[in-house]
Image (cartoon, rainbow, N blue to C red; front, side):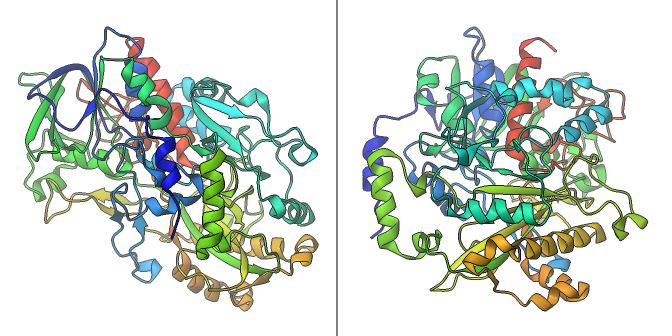
Length: 591
């Protein structure tokens, strides 16, 4: 029997105040935040710091409180395919042998920050500089966005030991104890010795801090945990302490937003949110000042289209009256792709037994219940590698480098201390290390559209067009071959690292492409479906201006990963936190 009972006593007193599932009909607030996720939780919390301002958060999922799967870091995969996940899938992908990968999205307060793998990085400095150049707004440059990154961070220094020497840079971190925790892994580090050693042996340079703006090389991975538990947008910005002290902030759970309604009159202004509450009733709430749409890269464009904002032809095909033709909505979906290559090792301290042996899991669960220490306080990753294909790579003879510059990675690698492949089952015996491989700087553009069979309440139709570009295939091949060289380095000989796949594919592009098609899964770091552009660009070309306001309408802003015009070359959570802090400041300053 898996042991979790002690967990409930630890959290018994942690209940949310000023929270519910039903509101009085037609209530009015100064601000309404649609989506209590990674961005929405922060924005609502920041705006409600002013006691004279009333804020409503409408969240589609339940509370995160008292939920063991959302609290203990190691077991986060249990949240996928659960009631905390919207349970989206893509359409069948032709280049993935017509597989339709899952696309987990947080259906819970805190959004995907409540269910993800907690990897906390911010994208390289050049990504932010590229956004600033694209929008014509220098406030997005790295040196300017860094203050928002620090503002929401509570960095936890690792032990002052030789092992962690040169593993972090205090100048790029915030030390706010009551904000998002940022922690290096400090337990079960046998893998660090071969990981760091092999990197040096194959020419991968050491990076002092993965979040210093220049991540290419190997560095210690950083995670959004604190005190042995997940640290999310909900736990830090919409926790019981904050909600109890702010009667001006209300959080509405289990409420599905269907559309936004324009105010009657000649000016196109959106002030009213229509939603279906937990009782099943269709209700509206009105904002005196602004509606902030933070429903995420998939739901935000769907809500906009249901509201009559989007590509005219698509709206007409779904019998939705066009309020404003904005062709860019739901287009420009960009994401990373991932694959997992596995090596068997003769180490016995991998995490495989935690996953397949209940007694081993219960041992660690007892320790977590006792003092929140041990292996369940973290994931199975220690280091991460960001890399680039060589400057003289043949691919550059046929296409330009889509990355943001020479210090921006093309791919990401991180070895896991166990079998993590989602496309093949773990063997019942043996110990393994998995190289998780992600193509970062993708040039593929996908779409998010309405479900033609149920456009008003159906799930989004997600087509990321995985592997539809030769660039993605080329980079994936290069990353897999780099991984093979890495595990063939002398530092791994002690552990007899042996690939569990046919290594002959490494010498044959076609064979390697076939393996990739069977192994690739979605990176689930999507961006771009309501992309930001310059202030003076046409409303149909871009969706929001640099101040996050939707072009062509008033009273409506968007703040989530849908606004990023380019794929983030890293994990999106940290970048999302930064823009949430930034838009909060813009609104509070009257901009």
